[in-house]
Every structure is written in C-alpha cells, then in structure tokens.
Image (cartoon, rainbow, N blue to C red; front, top):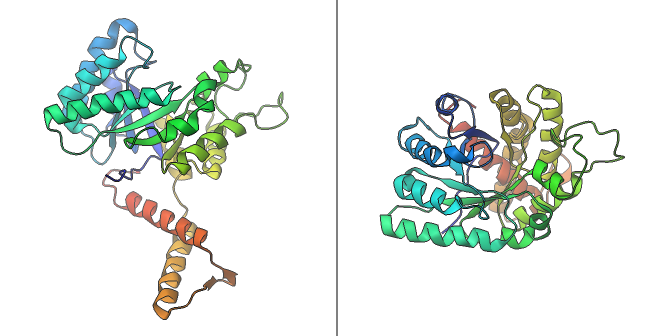
Length: 311
C-alpha cells in the first residue's frame, strides 16, 4: 500500500485536556491538528485526556485537516493505553499517530504491530499512519534505521528542545533555530536538521521541523521556517495560532514557482510527444531532477488549491 500524501505545512499542537483550545483549533488554518497526550498533559489527567481525544476525533469539525494525536513515549507506562483506548474507540476517524522521543526502530515497529491487530479486530478501513519524533542524540544517531522501520511511517519530526538537552547544549536560543546566536560562530542546528531530512527523503517520508518557542517573535519564526524549508522540510509544528499564517506561507510554493513548474512540465510533455531526448527552458537545459521538483511543486499546489478550509 502506498503512503498517503498529506499537507503538513502547519501542524498545530493542542493539549488534549484543554477543551476550549481544541474547539478553537477547528476554526484555524492548520493543515494538521495534533491533539497532544504527552508533554502538555499532567500525569493525573492522562486518562481523561484520552477520552477527550476520542471525543474530538468522533465529533470535531475537522474538514480537510489531518487528524492526529501524539501519544506518550514508549518508555512510559501510558503509551499502550494511549494506543489501545484511542484507536479502538476512534481509529476509523484517525489519520496519524505521533510517537515522541523515538530512539530505536523497534519502538515504531511495536506501535505498527499493535495498530495492525486493532485494525484487524475492529475491521477499520485504510491504514493509520505513524510519525516518529527525533528528540535525542541516540535517536538522531539511528535516524536512518528509524526512517525505514515501518511502511506505516509517513514523516520524521525534529524535536529541537529535547535534542539540545540530550546533548547538554546551552539553553540559550531554545526558541528555535531561527534565533540570532552571537555566542556560536555558525548555525548549530544545521547538522541535525540536515541529517534528519536526508534520512526522511531517502525513505520517501515527509520532514517536519520543530516548533518555534517564542510566540511573539514572528521574524525569528520566519527565519526558522526559511532555513528548514531551504533544506527540504515540508512544514513545522506550531504552538500558537498566530504562527500558522507564516508557516503556511513559507512552506507553500510561490506563485512564481508554480508558474515555472507548469511551464516546465508542459514543455517536457511537448518534448516527449515529439520524441526529443533533451529539453531547454528559458535558455537553460532541463534535467530529470528539475522535472521531479516541478512535479512535486505541482502536486503540492494542487493539494493546497483543493483545500475547502482557509489556508
């Protein structure tokens, strides 16, 4: 079964135990709403929060948005109940599960096996996808193995704050990698960003960037988005509604990119019709990589244009 292609420009993280925030999220221009059961939910509210996820999946006004929730880590006593309780009750309404702090491909496979059993028992149509969040030195070291760990896997997510903590990096600049960091003569997040996106794309997965922590620093957020978009990232987590317009703008192809892609693909089809082996556009030779990029831009723009919800 082929992996579904989904828009992931903006992934809004919402605490599952905050009913008001969940309701508000359905009116916001996020491509993905991710109901969080992990960091944002206190231990004594985990059980009730699972029920809230089920309720939101079954009765929320999702529209075209991707339906997602983040479970607790596989090293916690909450993970198996997160999967069983939510998926058995609302798995037919769920698109994706996010596994946090993945250090080992076996963690992804364990969730895959559990989902397979639940889907078979309940007779759910389709297949629930998985996203793996890379948040530690160990996870980044094994990111290539993790990327190929399961056919359910759809995306890798970079968790910048926990990753920095696992390396005992100074806490300055934890808002995200768009911060101006005069204390470091370079871009200290470039290596993990590049390593993770390389693993993701090699496995045919989407790559999602970490959230930007300073919700009032829109210029810093913009810089952060531009950096990861330039490296090939498909989108970014948001922790505040005000961040969504910037994410949707930066991770969307520009009108110029769309127009050029359409011209290039039209010229390519015409060259194929004539049996010509080479192609030039605007005085420049067009190679196979240019065609692939144009097809990606065109496919993304088609998904954006077909959205019924505001974007």
